[in-house]
Length: 267
Length: 332
Image 1 (cartoon, rainbow over the protein chains, first blue to last red):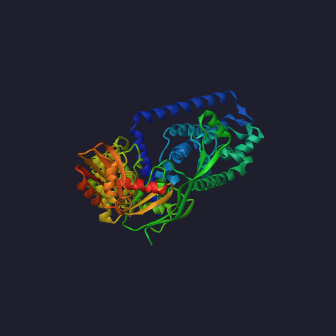
Image 2 (image 1 turned 90 degrees about the vertical axis):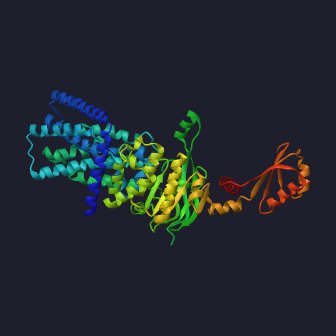
Image 3 (image 1 turned 90 degrees about the horizontal axis):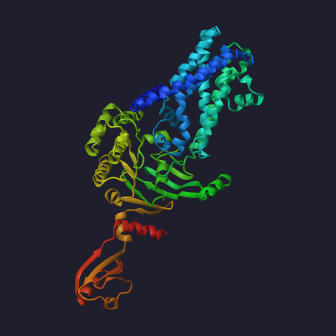
C-alpha cells in the first residue's frame, strides 16, 4: 500500500529530525536519560524491598506481582515513548494555537502531533519494565509458546492504545473546557499507579472504576493474567483489544467534534 | 466559477465575560456570563485566478479569522467557502496541498532544526521531486537570498531571515493559491521591498493567486489591484484602493502663507464660496479645506493670487492612509 509506505517514511523522517533537534542540546538529553533512569531504579528498589517482605498479597505471589508490575511499566513506557506529546495537546496545541501549523500540512493532524515528539527518557522505563517482566517470567517458570508471544504483542499493543485513547479523550475536552495548566490529564497520571498491582487488592467500587470507567486495569492486570495461567479473567483478556478500539473510537470522535470548535489563538 | 468563493460567511466566537480583580476571578469560577462575538459577519466575495487581493482592516476586524477559515484551520459557523473547488475545513488535507500559507507573526518551521532540514522534511511531506526541489531552492535563493541561511537552526535566525525562510518553505510545493498574513510585519525597509518584489514576481510569472493581509498600506499600493477592507466583521470596501483614493478622498487642503496679516473674514468674503473650511495656522498662514469634486483648486488659488500676496502655497494630496481612515469612519 502506497500510503502505508508514505506514512512510515514520513514517520522516520520526523523521528530523525526530532532526534537531530534533541541532539542540539546534548547535555539536556543526558540529564533526561540519567534522571529518568534514577527515578526508575528508585521505584524498582522500593518495589523489590516491599515484595521481599511480603511474600504474597491476596493470593498473588511475589513473582506474579512483579510480572504484572513489569507488564504495566512496559505498556506505560511504550505509551510515553510514542504518545507522550498527546499530553501536550491541550495546552501546547489547542490553547497556544500550534494546531494551526499542524492543520496546514497535508497529513492527519493527530499523527503529526504524535510524531513530533518522542520521549527518549522512557527508554529507561522500558528497559526496567521489560527487565522486571522477563525476570518474573523466568522466576515463575512461565512457558512462552509462539502463539502466546503473538498474544503478548497484541495485548501490549492494546494496552498502549488504551492509554493513548484515554489521554486523547481527556485532552480533547480542552476544545470545550479551556484548561491552560493541562490539569485534565493529571488524575490519570496518579491513578495509573493503581494499575501496577493486582486489581483484586482494591475495594469493589475501585475495581469497577479501574475496569469500566477508566479502564487502566486493561493495560496491565487483565492482560497479564493470561500469561500467569489464571483463567478467571479470560473474558477480560478477550475484551482488551476491544476496549482499545473503543477508547480510540471515542477519543477520535471527541477529537473530530472538538476540531470543529477550534478557535486558534490571537492573530 | 471563481477560484475562491465566499458566500454569506459568518464565524461566531463565544467569549466569557471576565470580571476584574481576584474576587472577580473567583466569581468567574462560580458563574460565567458569555457573549457572542461575530468575528466575521455575513461576508461574501469572489477571487479570480491570478488576482493579488489585499485584505486590510484594523486589529480585531476579522482578517485573520477569514484567512483561517479559507485555509481550513477554522470551521465557519455559517455560510459557504470554496477554494479551488474544495471546501477547506471539510477536504482539509487535499485543500492544503493547493495552498501556501505564511503567518508573519508565527513561524511554521521547526524551531530547533536547520532550515534545510525543515525544507527537506516539507519536500517529503508534499512529495516534491528532488529535481523540482532543487529548482525551487535556486529560485528562492535568487530573490530571497536564503542560501547562506540554510544551515542555521531556525531559532537563531533574525526576524527578517526567518520570514524569508518561512515564505520559501510555504512555496516549496508551488501552490496555486498563497495566503500571506502580515508577511512584512516588523521588517526593515530592505527586507520588505525584497519580499514585495518576490511576491510581485511570483504573481506575474506563475499566475499565483495571492491573498495578502497587512497593516502596511504601501504593500497594498505596490502589489494589489484589488483590496477588501473589513471592519467589525463586515466588508466595507471592495475595489481598487488607488481609485478609491481619487473618489473617496475628496477632501483636499491648500496651505497658504501670506506676506500680510491674515484676516479670515476678508479671505472668506473674497473667495465667496460656501463649503470652504478655514483653519488659521498662525498670523501669516492658513489652511483651506474643500471638496475637490465641488470646487477646483485653481479657483481658490486664482482668487488668492488676485487679492493677496502669497509667499508660498501647498496642495496636500490625501495619502492612502487617510483614504482608509475615511472609509473606516464613514462606516461607523
